[in-house]
Image 1 (cartoon, rainbow, N blue to C red):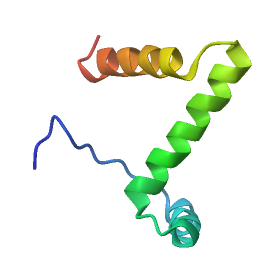
Image 2 (cartoon, rainbow, N blue to C red; image 1 turned 90 degrees about the vertical axis):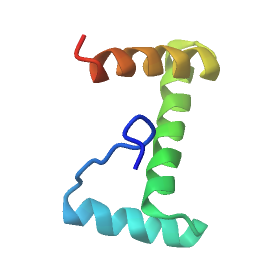
Image 3 (cartoon, helix red, strand yellow; image 1 turned 45 degrees about the vertical axis):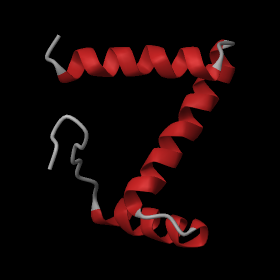
Length: 71
């Protein structure tokens, strides 16, 4: 597995069950459901801060990469 492309995260079993049930309605696997939830949250934050979705996503991605590299 390419560790530069994929990361694992642990969620409690209750959240996992909810994610599975939410994904079932949209025919999404848990990973895709988490990606959708993240995308929805980016849109919500961008709207709240009066920024565009793209700029907010890039800002968060940049910040996240810094954290991933231990900065």
